[in-house]
Length: 147
Length: 441
Image (cartoon, rainbow over the protein chains, first blue to last red):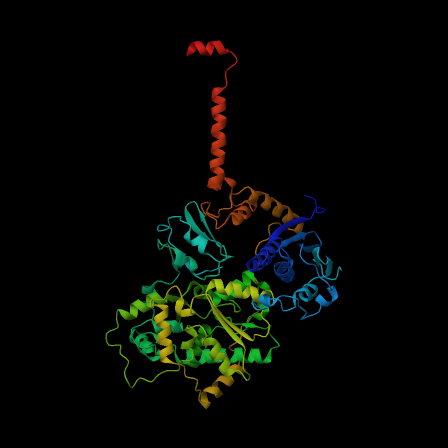
């Protein structure tokens, strides 16, 4: 394999499967560790994965989450065919949430998902269309400052 | 690296109960015998619990040797106090140990626990040297799992020495008995590992390790005459409460200048889930967490003789004595200033060996790993001697195993081989024609 070809691990996310978010986050973390990637970057990836997957579980009605590993970066791609995000800028604000009460009662939906993803990633790109779904791409660079 | 677990190869049947119970996937069965991967083992003792053949036990020093050395000082895990049919009053145990010609450490022990609680409270109050929530370092299995699996949480660990080490240092200094060897009575492999391979200091103050089970038996077999008399003064029980989940938290809170938000969690499964929550930054607003590998705390340790439920009732009935005299406080202040409660060194991470020597090589190996994994049956049956197909694939790409170790893959291989042999046996040699063969019949 040449390093031009990224290595991708993809997992299906089922709607309302709250257990799997933690599992995927820890699986991705362990995978990165086996590549010799620093604990700090493993944790960042873990948080981004967890929050992105939670968004799919809560809002997206299921979808897919993938981790792409390249020689200089890790990319988390989370995609769903859910309702999309009406106002991305608003969703980026801490504490803003459209999660239904049933989800908030479970302790989720505190409106920290996207803000956390932005905080722990170096690049964030959200492609969304109301009614069509959302694809989120978060990049974490292996050498900080390269961004 | 020490892990405090003794393997009795003659008793090991090569079953897979222990490898399936290990929370860090540190066990393998190779050539019919169990092996422990030292760099992954946290000494929690789950494997000892799961072994039905008694092939695993606590690694301790020989009792005849320990009991023959005189003078010998003894420090005990507070859980030892709850192992007997009498009150958990530490003073009773102290007398029992004295009658066996040991020099028990009790006064200094109570002091060391007070000091650890005070130092932890002040570390939290000051807040400059740790990240929140502050994680207790009392349970050595928890410290080890942070070092191995949650390296990002190392700055959360309270830089406070185990009071079971501090009390020995204190005793030796106060009695000017620096040459007297010390034994520690412990209830779990992680504490043995703490002695063999100390974390945050270069050498342990402990010279010999005795299991709680062994010490309990030795005391019970000599127990006639041990009675709790009215004149025996009840000893401080703050440190005794550390044996029960929540006891440390209570003690630390007692020394805190502000009300603390705390949580006490026990059992490996809970500890791991909780550490993950901290790692994902989902535990905001918490000051202090007490994590214990064993159910209900140290009274649930693998080497305890008494039921952990009874132990809990005993501690709860005995109560908690918050009162500290002026003199106690003065003492503590001077010990605090002397920094003897502090870990001498930073707790370092225990790095796992990456798949390859550099990232490119490691990624190649990871791809290979995925390819190998895809061909495995994903039953996680353990028959190959590994806890899961995922670990099997990892071992194979690391060169520590072969696909033929998989019974299902081996069976497929035999099936295809036998097909091939069958096909070969039907093939004719060139000198024989079809008719010749028919005549031969």
